[in-house]
Image (cartoon, rainbow, N blue to C red):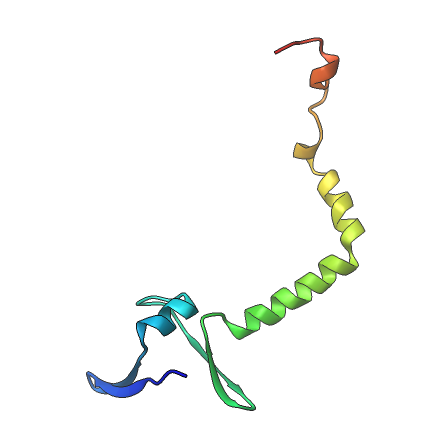
Length: 95
């Protein structure tokens, strides 16, 4: 368990977090922390809560539409050889 002391910072109040907490949260001076209300009180996280929900929805779509995404990836112009170009093994060139 860790403690953080509320202190005066200019005309405001602030919380000084121990270095170990900053390291575990992977944050540094100037980074944003989000306080999320939960049934247990407040949780502090460096990740925007709405983004996590969006990523979860994206993962569900990617799982459900895996075959469509694979077909789209295979259809990309850079995934196909250029027109008139032959595959390296068919050109007769050696390295």
